[in-house]
Length: 211
Image 1: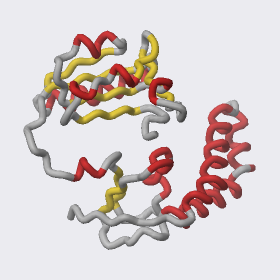
Image 2: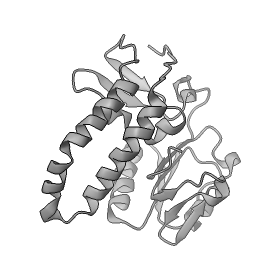
Image 3: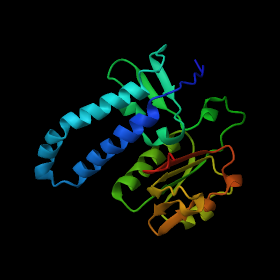
Image 4: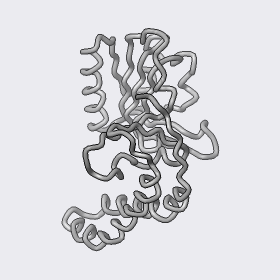
């Protein structure tokens, strides 16, 4: 119903320090363990993982006032990096997220029907942009796809949608050291000129894009 509630999470910082980073380490280690040993590793770390999940749920979910079965989360700060939807207790609730509260506001002007979809060098990234292109074309968008930095300059001057599916790095010392890795190298965030994307939907699908 578009009501916005700000929820303080007094235990979030401690839970992130004690459990989120440890949980990420377990998941990343499991991904590197050979397939024939992965099940054994997950069994050995099961109790530890469940403890971390319980602590995160208590810190991030218990304070939420569930007054509706449909909830949209808008994380702040470090919570952008946490898969909050995956921590939700299974049930009948529908949980989704938005990157910024401005997206809740009614649109003031018609969306420009042009879209640019950029992918990194991996097959899954190209498949993602193919699927999104099919959806947007069905909605009447003029869609261009690419995997190189030059595609950004060759696109229309004003874009309605930019979607980038690629590996990305956020450097805490400055945005000039941050970027997205396309097939021909790094796309620096300084190349995303704000005048070209005013009023557009920009979606950066990478590991650290939430930051």
